[in-house]
Length: 402
View 1 (cartoon, rainbow, N blue to C red):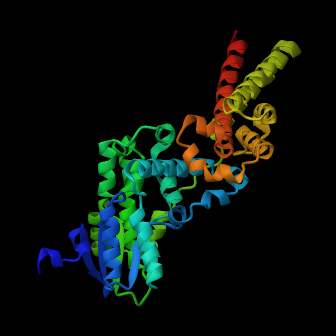
View 2 (view 1 turned 45 degrees about the vertical axis):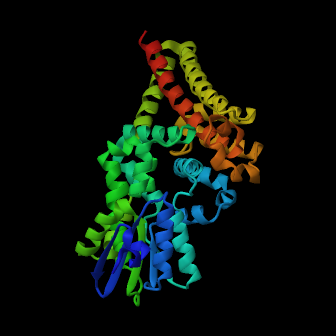
View 3 (view 1 turned 120 degrees about the horizontal axis):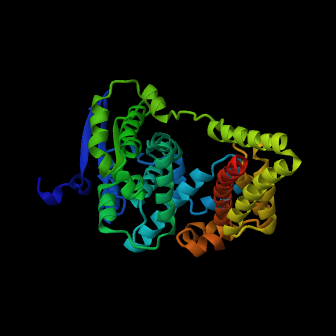
């Protein structure tokens, strides 16, 4: 067969694995390549496949196929259910993709979107085989530890605010085909734990999902980033554990104790110090220590809200909530109160959601957009409140010992 007679998709990185009566054709793509889009079209239109599997989960598919998805978001639910961090991470990924589209002239993941569209048009079975992006973030976060999570958060925040074009190294990663790894930047290179969750675990997960294709499938085309091709082929051929059990293992997230032992101990010590002040120094000393607690916790929480350009009532809510920390249930933060007040006083309009991805790419945009400003309100208020607690504690103990 001459080179011109070889189907276009066969000139792209690919692997074929046969197992349990099913032939899996793994097509490795680059998420920023027009050639990859053409290869996907050529493969699906060939009529050689009865099932199409893509490296997507339901959430990422919705983000690719529904440009108004963010406009349907219930921001109050995001805040109340403690999903602000995950929402911010997804926003960082969306902003990163938007910058790539502007710089390179092609929508990242266009070949995956095209595979889904063609499978639906031709009536082929469609399988989403990637792990939910939220689970990937949670498992990565759980392995990194406190300082690792802090560094990751800074990396994502920096990616949100930068306006610089992608460097050659980042573009090369996308040619090798993994959007999530590239979006984490240099941090992914130096973090084995992050690499394990973002790349290696997903190879195993997608292999397990492929082995779960419904009965009747015989020719499966799997469209995946080229960076997953070798690992996915190996796991698909060699893994012997039941796919359902393996998938459950890779979806499991260790539930972190919601009881804040460190801050609770700190609260006990501070309350004990204030009580000791009343007992040993009388009402004047006790009132002075109590005043310092209120001043620093309320002041720094309010300062955080002000830094987020919060509404005056949001500032007041954070200032009232912060000194009441010993009496609030775990997980109920001053940022929660201030953000809920903010979203009521300055309700985001439909246009705020539509422009969120664009606005999130600039510092001014974060403050201009009412959705992102509410997220800033939540984050900066809590940072200010935490700083106030520690500073108040140091001031109280310093006063007591002197």
